[in-house]
Length: 430
Image (cartoon, rainbow, N blue to C red; front, top):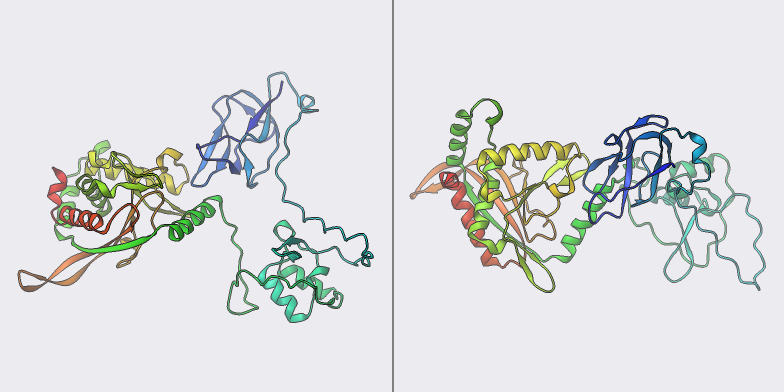
């Protein structure tokens, strides 16, 4: 009997995903363990392996389809000896299709029917207080208003039948009907303006699942979490000298390492959290959760957005172990190959933009964590040492804090511990 391949749940919270790519074609032989396809979740693209052997009889969901619910059939595998005739009569769910525009509401019985329109009605959606809003891009609306064109007479060709610029241009080129009388219910104003010039050209870049989730989480963070910020300047001359010496002593082969400044920062954060455990916390309505494990998340920029792989038990790992683990995590993060457990969780986040020349910045807290440390570039600045003017390599670090779970004094104590470790880097080797 044919075997259905279902959309898997790749994490405990996953409810839907995107079928990014098929790695097998219909008619290909499949063995248990073969990679069938790639599924895009909120943070990574993961391969789905076959658990049975046979032939890939039919692909039910095409590449690029989003919003596929967990346990939806996405393909059918034919067992040995079966052919395509075995697929007939199977109740397999079809691939999700874009929703059709809603049917116009039926007119009351006492109202005479309106004359037939020469063109299909534009897609609409209900708006609060009654009435409907035509689904059109902001640019299409402005072009229609400028030319006196009624959008009701246009059929959209954009996503979900939305009216876009090319639809308005086609209607104008084809001699669209004169504008109709103004509707009784005012139409909603555009919700976004892509540019200051009404006729400015732009390119639409579809949002990936990952970018949508990141946007949702960060919006909630700034909206719901009472942020406050603490900054401190760290002298990193001793750290840079120690880093140079340690890298020069790196062995060859599998045990080789090349330490970065960020590796020292991860180690310093972990040891500072050991000294000030109150900063390693999460707010809930019932209690503040103070973590016993010190798991440090590190922000990594990828083509699809930010992801925060985690160095687990960072306080129990040396600089070389942190360095090698971070390089592996960052590389797989950029290739969207991380497993969910490698980026979900963590008690504290580091975001380092120093390599981009940023002097200082304030980062958005990564919920449900309470703190994120923003690292600026190390640069030579004039400082006063022992009452005399000197030059030192200084690095500005800004801590964003959730005031519900971490008080100002706790944040200040954490930064003091962090600064002590950075400026006396030999203490990180103990």
